[in-house]
Image (cartoon, rainbow, N blue to C red; front, side, top):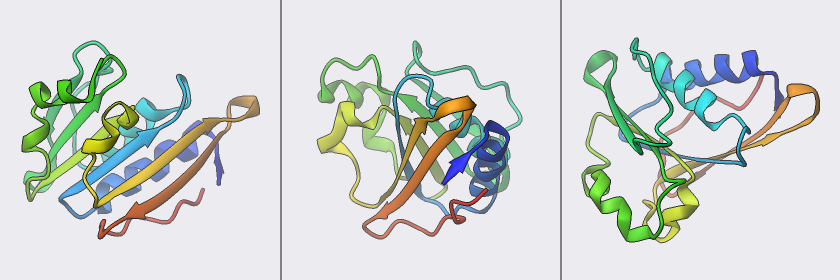
Length: 147
């Protein structure tokens, strides 16, 4: 599916509002593809009202959403080796009320949980983004990828 940025944000907010937890979302795509835009929209939909800076330099931010949900936003771009994720609290991910949004998951590919959603974003022409989403294992259902 191809989205405008507004459509991507609207889908992300629907996803965040309806997603069952625990949920792990691997956000893949090149720089500027819209991973952080989508992560922020998902978090807003999950009830986060805080300003959400990019975790590129801090690597991880944690937020409290609605209904007691915890939202973890990680950016692994600056991770040098997969084992470095343990210092970010990787071993604690997956609690009952947690929604984990991980950008650049390929930096820790072998450590990704088997039950997750893979969402890939690709910048298309004229500011559009191509989005594909696929569950792995027994990941909970998400809203359909549609504009």
